[in-house]
Amino acid sequence: MPADLVFANGPVLTMDDHRPVAEAVAVVGDTIMAVGGREEVAAEIGPGTRVVDLGGRALIPGINDNHTHPIAFGQSLRTIDARPAMVASLAGIQDAFRAAADRPPDGSGEWLLARGYDDTRLDIRRHPTRQDLDAATGGRPALLTRTCGHLAVANSAALARAGVSAATADPPGGEIDRGADGEPTGVLRETAIRLVQELIPKPTRAQIKADLLAAGERFRAFGITSVGEAAIRTSDELAAYQELALAGNLPVRVSTMMLIDDTLDALEKLGIRTGFGDAWLRIGPAKLFQDGSGGGRTAAMVDPYPGEPGNRGIAIYEQAELDEKFSRAHRAGFQLSAHAIGDRAIAMILDAYEAALAVAPVADPKALRWRIEHCGMCTPTILDRMARLGIVAVPQPNFVYELGDSYRRNFTPEQLALSYPNRAWFDRGIVAVGSSDVPVVGCDPFMGLRSAVTRLTRDGETMGPGQAVTTGEALRMFTLHGAFATFEEGIKGTITPGKLADLAVLSTDPRSVAPEALHGLRCEMTTLGGNIVFEA
Image (tube, rainbow, N blue to C red; front, top):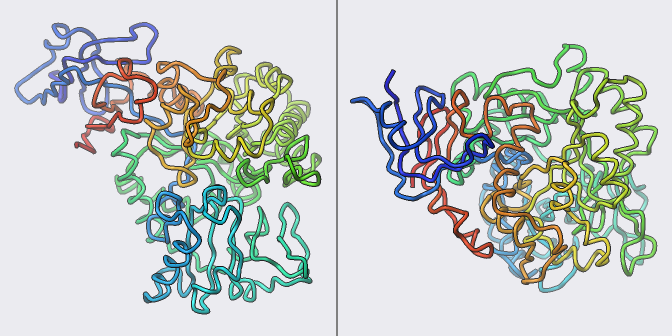
């Protein structure tokens, strides 16, 4: 059968050890049919074949951004953009709120929502307060979320609606910042954010689908063909994905992480477990959040943060709770996953994983591919335990560039030497997976490649220089390793005959690009199941 689509005059970077580099690829339907030299693949060309002349551009497997928040990403595209690249001052944030307050209410009702500020890059070098927001929001309730998503600032109207006052106790796993007078400053950490968030009108299923489509357009333009949805909380969220998939409109392939506290009861009753679904939409691991962020100083650490002797971050669950939740999810047939950035949080997760194995032993724990999302601040002991258990690390290389300067202020040089330790993971045989965590930072995978290879922060400093990987290793993190993390390496992740024709054409061969210039790469074409879904 003649090919529907042929890519010729590579290089083709396959990520397949049996043939790492080829010159051409033939596609029939949604499947890669042939990979080889120009002459080999030329035999597959028929009268109806579209031939894409790469002309020296590189063809790689479709990029797998294994930890994202597509719904939140889509929502962020229609809220106030408070990222430092857009507004670098408190006055700029206030101006953005004033402009929004002058517009009619949208799907969030009268609420004013913004996301993306970074106190370490604001001109005031602190978190805004409720009074700062009050001056710009015209009495409408407002919530400004930090870039990490683990800290937010509410104005006085929002706090009043939530009933948050000096008398309000900190919720379990969260903190309400208070001034010298005991009154809330507006800053809410971790679970305390929910006190206000729960009052914001929930998007309709139609709006969620629109947000997913908007996010999907951005993904495709970067050559991203598969993503991990890092937090399914509600039936409407999962149904939105399912309705798009059934209609053939899901913009990328999705593996969902199901939040244990919100979804495990229902999933357990239905007998649904990891792996349910198909190549477009599948149920992934059962997940929970155990701490916050390094930039926001809420990641749970063994030692206090420099300059804050009373602050070791926030551990959301006690050890006994973790043990019970993960043991239950393991018995129900789920791959396990946890958000853990600080060394104390990571150690607690590893303890809970071992407790789950004690309750329900398996012959080979490595076959379970249990994950730690972010896995930021490691220690030699943590690395040893990860290797022994076969833990999959899911870091975000671009955190080094976007957030690294705040990490350099928040952690010691000794801690940073093993922060997001890609080199150590590779050397110990621990599978490290590339991802972005968008909208925490952008989803540009080429900036992720640059960060993994150079370890350069935005200020040009090097964060953990011994943890750099090669360009080839970084590419594997964003392709084959992502497929491995979701048990899908048999159908995607490499350019191999018989696998899905999810492919990305890059502007040039990344192997020939200086590490510091990798962010200059561009995606010029994306195919998903053999269909061209993006073309520059």
